[in-house]
Length: 346
Image (cartoon, rainbow, N blue to C red; front, side, top):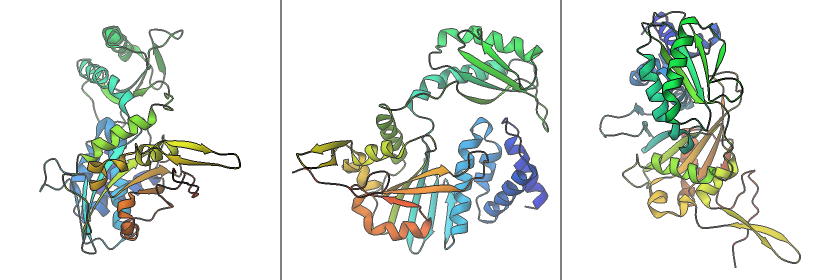
């Protein structure tokens, strides 16, 4: 693949989004595309370019693959290896070890699943509207499927007469249930109205629900591993966790915190209800890696990486650090800020 071809693919990757990449963005992504192509990860490049509204999820996998390659020492890396069906996202061979990696986006949890069918219906309807534009649709948390038909007619009407980059509220600004924004493509020609972005109108408060939802998300990710971790096999889940607190991930993995009070001191412990106390989960998952962007304004931000280690595999930490570097390693007896402050229950 030549540099010019990689640049065209980089431009196409952003076409279905509202993000307008700079020349630096295109140069960065095209360089990453070339690097992955040379490493035999053309399938991941294709997934990124054809990702549509899921381009941001795929970009996390794409950026992770770049970091894995640049960290060095990898003997072989494969994306969705064909030897398994369905496969984990990555298989990596390094230092006589096999790493299996499954990537999960924690920004989308169970609460979002209520809207998936709504978005799918809206997307299918949009493809019948002869307007060559992209659109973004954001729905309120109390939007329900009984309102879809009215919203669809609203979208079709505004698509014909609407102004690019202007927000349209449905049914009105007093009690909006949906927000729609249109924009015209820069490089491609569209035959119909095309869904580019979908999501929530407001960021829901996850406190109280987060632990349960994170557990569900991690259990789903762990189902990619039909084998146990051992001395030569390391199974890792990588979380895109920009919108999650450390304490919620800790409680999902290690157990819910509770205080221990006495006359002269106050300490804390954990319930034994974390996933690392579940034998099926803990026998398969060596560790969890949480990714958080250092800069939110660029899709190519460097990441802060946190490793939540399964205590049963703490002797594997150095091997995992050989795969990626971590800003922090969290264990069962450490609070999210990283300070040991733990007393076992009597």
